[in-house]
Length: 497
Image (cartoon, rainbow, N blue to C red; front, side):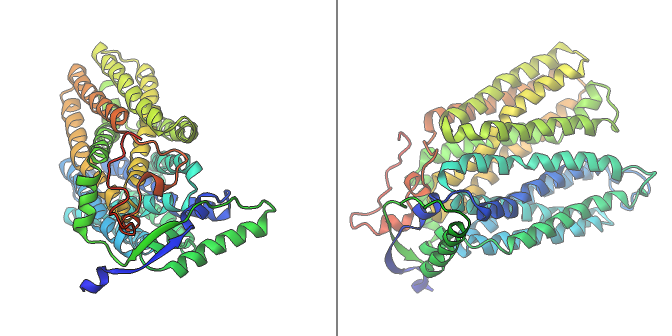
């Protein structure tokens, strides 16, 4: 077994430069559609469960489950996502991006179909756990693959838009729920089951598209598959040459790599906690901040609107859909600025700006106003900025750690953020909303604003200049450091670049 960890050989490659110089092409569209569409599925999945929750607790739903068990199912889903991210994240770095982004999608498909056949609480919990595990694994496999195949000059905007597309699924989930929960159209024990089937049908389409997406050439050449990497990149270049008369730019200098089949876990852990400690602090701050704010609002917005603004459950999905549109609009409109103005100023603005607006939301609650439009306007403005920041958290972690650790880094910090902020946020918001005291609910908004502000401050101090840069210049691969006679080439934490 030890022989599998030794070097295979030292090579020089220009593959990173060749990938970054490529003009936008059909290949990149396939990557965006095939890999990015899962965020739409995630948004659809999470929103749909919230929308059909009330129906599941009613008589005649086909499953005897109460409100407390619905809440537990949400916690089980989050736990599955955290554990799935960690489990599949490590495998993604070890076995490759493609193998895992196919496996994790299949896990999601099987589990979400199984959810539609739920007949008892224990079965529902089990199906929700594995659905979450599949989605959590997707976060690690997909973000790493996308960033390794998208040209550096547009990586920021593409990554933000893809992660922000979660909210397109949320819009669809809310609007579909209005139809599927209409008893005049579907029986009480059928409509909610179809809701889960919709996600599975869309997932099958994504699975078909993914079959044509290759393994990450960056992963291949580091792990000893140089010939396959050259073949994939050469094929992309040939396709572009066949479709356009423009000449490809010079790929620049070559990169020296000492190839290895696998990297020991202790070496991967050393990167986060010894080589890049400040980047690790930054990652925790960004993920905890967005997880607290987003999960707290997402799981409780409907309840907040019915409790304090006297809106019926039938109308609430339309308000949530409007809010979701603003969440998608943020990354679409602001995304290009992350590649031009830069990561550090834009991430800081997103976090600190949403924190300031979060304070305004808190004062709106304290005022006791029943004007739902005032509340929604401030809420929409808050999450227009927050959504860009949340998407940038995934982008940041995917960029600032070496390639051999990329997927596990995403999984690790996602799991921490979700476990801390993603659990504390919903519990706090839910408990304070249940008090029916608007003044107490404002406390949750103040705390959410504070946590987001900490993320913005961390970005100001520890943020990394990554716009329009190659991944290798942001964090040199570990195997490139090994190829240098004088030790790791990137051993110094370069936060102040």
